[in-house]
Image (cartoon, rainbow over all chains, first blue to last red; front, side, top):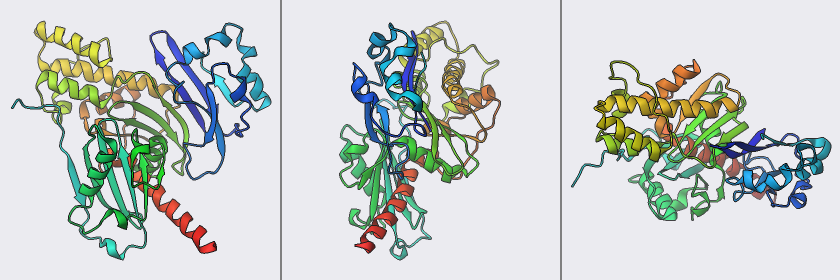
Length: 95
Length: 293
C-alpha cells in the first residue's frame, strides 16, 4: 500500500509516500536523514501483519516543507533518504 | 439557557434478539475521536450494541463512559469484553483496551463490513480531519491520504456554522438545498475564515440557507481535491458524522459524478466497528497461541 504523510497548504503540497509493498523495514533511511523524519515501526495500516515499515514520525508530519528543505536545495536525485533506499525505491516525495 | 444549535444527539442501541451470554467471543471497539467517541460490541462478529457520545476533555473517561453506556442494562461489564481495541485520536488513552490500532485501518475494515465488499474508495469525514482511503477487496488499506495540517471541511466546521446561523445541525443538510439557485462556494474552507466570510454575506442580506449552500459546496470541493490525489475507484462511500449531512454528501457526489453507497448501519460507528472486528480476529489469534502453550 501507499502511505502518504504530510499536508497541503498555501505554499504547496508536501507529501512523503512510503510504498509498504516495496519497503522491507530495513531502516536505512532513518540515520541518514538530518531532520530525523523517519522511524521504523509496525505497519499501522495493517494490524494483522507482523512486518515493520518506515514511516514519517508523527512529529514531522506537520512540518515536512521545513524539515526537508536543507536536502531539497541540493537537488532531488541526491536526497539521502532516497539514495539510502536505493533500488527498493520505496520512498517518494511529492515536491 | 441559549439553544445550542451545534449539539447533535448522543445515542445508544442494542440488539434485543441477541443474548450475549451465548456468544463465544465478545469483542469490542472504542473510537475516541476529537469530537465524538463511539463504542461497538460484537457477539461472535455480529453487531450487538453501539453508542455514540461527545468526547470530553478527559479521553480515558470518555472511552469508559461511552463503553458503559453501550452496555447499559445488558448486565455486561468491562470484564466480559474478551478483547477490546482502541482507535481514534485517543486510542492510546483507553485504559481497558488490549490493543491500539490506527483509525485508518479500522475505518477501512468497518466500512468494508458496513458497505460491502465492493467498496474501493472511502472518505472518512470526521470531527477534525478528513481521510481519503483506498481499500482492496479484503478491506485492507492500499492508499491513504489526509491533510495533517488543515481541518477544513470537517464536522467541527459544520458545528460552527450551525451555531452561527442558529439552525439545528441535523437539519442543515436539507436546508442547504432550499435556495433559488446554487450560490458560488465561499472562497475559503478554513473554518475561521469561512465564518467571517459568511458573517459578511449575512450582512449583505443573504438568506441563511444560501450561506449554508455556499459553505457546503466549498466543503465538498475541498474534500474532492483530497480524494483526487488517491485514485477514485467505485464503489465509493462516506463514513463519519458528515455522511449524515445530505447537503455535503450530494454536493460531493455531484462533483465526483458518483453515487455514494448507503448502509443500514450508523455511519459514525465505522471506526469502532472496524476496531471490534479486528478485536475478534486478534482474540482468536490469542486463543490459538494459548492453546499451543
